[in-house]
Length: 122
Image 1 (cartoon, rainbow, N blue to C red):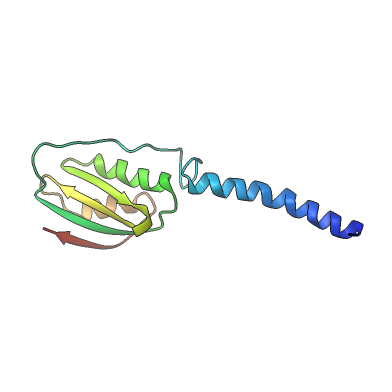
Image 2 (image 1 turned 90 degrees about the horizontal axis):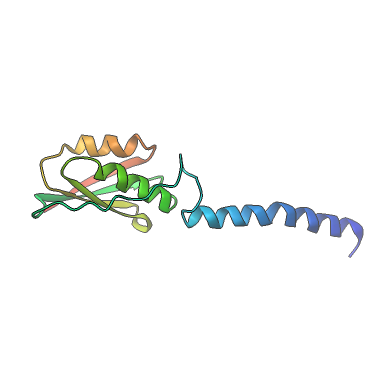
């Protein structure tokens, strides 16, 4: 190995190690990525059974922090409990009172995610 090859290897290591470390932190949801500080979902429970459920398809979520942000903001709505499935790019939303679908869509899109569809389930 000559000096030029050695310098190239050193430069690649200097660039790649922090990039890989940052990517791992990001994908585990441990970084302050995706629009803000790390958020934790609120564990919300409502009495009774839901009136109906929605499946909300969402694009733009990348990590657990994104998932937690969507869950937290939907759960802040009265009569709503949400569970986000990051790998499936959707939120299962249980409605315990009448809530306009536009409010759910707007809540998610204010977080800079895209709602690509809403399905009513039961």
